Amino acid sequence: MNDFRREMPDFNIDPKKLGKYVAFGVLGLILVVMFLMSWQDVEPGEEGFIYRPYGGGVDTEKSYVEGTQFIAPWNEMITYNVLQQSQTYRSTVMDKNGTDITVEIAVNYSVQRGKSSQLHLQWGKGYITFIDDKSQGAIKDVIGKYTYEEVYSTKRNALEGEIVEKLRKEFTDNHLVLEYIEIKDVDLPANIAQEIVNKETQKQKNLTAKETQKEQEYLANARIEKARGDSSLVVSARFKAEAIMLEASQIAKSPAYIELKKWEKWDGVGSPYGESNVFGAGVSVLKGYK
Image (cartoon, rainbow, N blue to C red; front, side, top):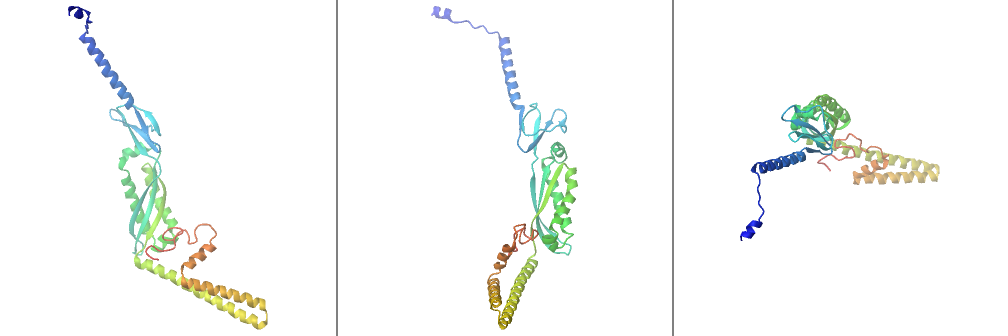
């Protein structure tokens, strides 16, 4: 037993040295953690800037593009989306004649590149409230200057341009870019929508009457040519009359036949219904009516 004790190694560790080793180990671990925390990511489509809580605050001089950036671990990287974004507003507005119309308008915008730090200082992450207030106010101001007929048809492009002009400077002064305005939809009161449907129905009836008149003219010409004895002209007039009779019957049976004729005459450019109809290009049926 005594021999075993004599063979045991004798560990004599200085407590001061042990404390020093532990301190160096803890310090090294802290440095490693701080180094790892110093790498901050700026995602694609974003722009970043540094917030220094212990001196200087928000750095408005330098912005960071997408990628991994090295900053001091006690600082914070704040990022903003700088891609084009869209806000859609649905508002019921009184036109200049006192008729209530409901419009759906998209406001497309983006944050000015290199200006996200100024936007943050002025509005913070809630800057969308500024866009909401200004856009809804501009929509009501501009729409109220026009009649409902102008809103859904003839003045559509002018309306979009006027809203853009009203908002562009305010957006620029607040570090935003107004990309464009789009009138997506217009809803009219039921009585006005029905009136428009009635007008379209009357147009179809007028077209049918016009075709019937042409048919009678061709038949009259056929009788005249027959009396003259020109058989080739008689046959031509007869076939034209029959074709008109067939087309008139198709119109009477199905108003959709008129839509087919529009598409047959379409040259492939734009829309056969025009670009400024109430529900967008290529749409011919009023919402709620078939």
